[in-house]
Image (cartoon, rainbow over all chains, first blue to last red; front, side, top):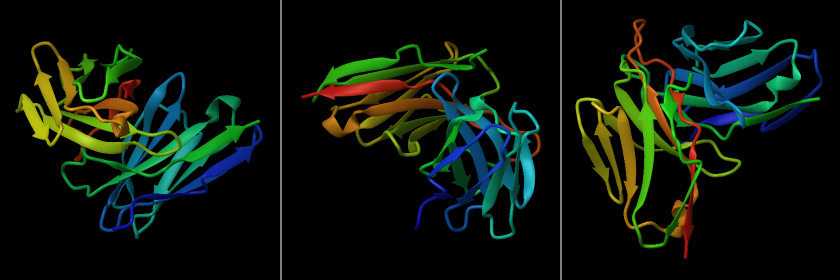
Length: 114
Length: 116
């Protein structure tokens, strides 16, 4: 089975712009979660989507949003970019259902905000 | 407030010896714990997990121990190999009332260096 794929792998934006990141989960996985990794804060949970619905959300401002499509692919959007949004954004998928504990990560999208 | 703590940023172990990575947590709602391994420029790779109803889980060279009363878990790697050099993240999850699990809460990682 192919793993989780994320596009693009690298992105450079300027403050105030918006960005959309894409994630394709492992075939058959219905849950997609997004994480932000920074040197200072480590890996932090953004949100999780299951069957096109946001099921769970971390403690991030409303500038961070996402969606999931009927084929389980997911996109994450960050509006009005700030310098502090520079990070590695990781997508993870799992089969979903009542337990979604073991998550399989993609390689990440490295976002740099100038 | 860090709910999952890995107090050793780095650990150096000789090849062939045992590597012990430690993790402490504060949230008593956590009921599932996982270890991930991460190489530079790659996403974390799932290594091993343990449910709170167990105190030990073994998979080949990797064993995870859970001490619920102390809110402590550890990952043992025996014997350590050069390919084990990576950053290891401890993660925990709590049941989510909406179904599924709460997002994973990660520690900040321990950089394990296996010396030949």
